[in-house]
Image (cartoon, rainbow, N blue to C red; front, side, top):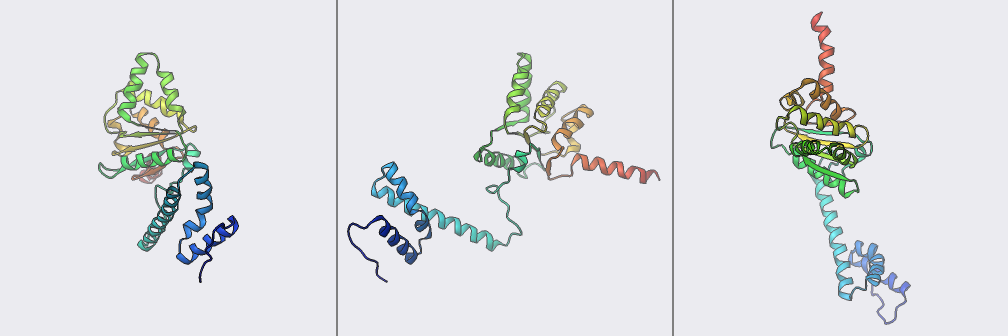
Length: 246
């Protein structure tokens, strides 16, 4: 098939010719996007070279995406799981997320990646180390600015707290952290990463009642990875107690 080549093609004829040529040359992305790219080129006053580069890059990007999709499909994964397709529904519902695992198993990496994806989707995100947050709260309390600081951390859609349970916190610092979590409870989401299971958090929060209250704030209606939930363990213990007594 030979395409007509002549000067002064109307836009309608030109569009039809481009569509036919792209089909023959197997350029589906250019066929689908050329009109939009052409309109943008006029608006942005692109050169011919710039416009041509935009067309080719659109095709290259789409081919790379399709190649990745084929490779993922060929790998035989049982279901689709990726940070790029990360579901932010739990942030919309103001639910907490706890990433628990041994040191070196990637909790911090995952926390940062999830926070990054949430920010890219338009959520207001704040990342901090647990010790840094507590130190900031203690300094704010000394300067009588703690309420203002807690309110600032309470406003973001997602607060990512890394290395929680890593170092011991004094009671004052732990109480201030508890106030931040209380400020956010059922209002905005908290995601934490820790290399210590909830059972070991008494080394960080030396007051058992305060420790239990903090765990409660982080697990209520939340999602946990890497360990049984504190509430689940407590429920099991209460259920097993009568049987042992009998």
